Length: 83
Image (tube, rainbow, N blue to C red; front, side, top):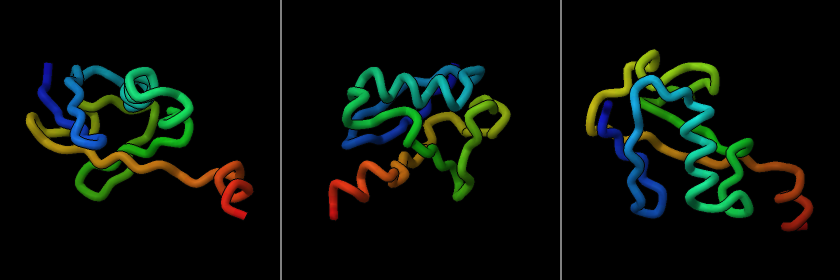
């Protein structure tokens, strides 16, 4: 197990090293709500590298007690809403 802090409005998540990135995104979606943070639109970034969904936290060499940046991609729905 690895204690990795993913800060999302100062909310931390505990991540197991064999979790796939897609699993972490799904966990964020479940905790925060699919309407606010849909997994399909989330990007996880560690040390400047966008983590691929099919890779594990361990494969990405995420260090214990480190931070992963969460970004949301813009989708067509967002663009239409702004216009």
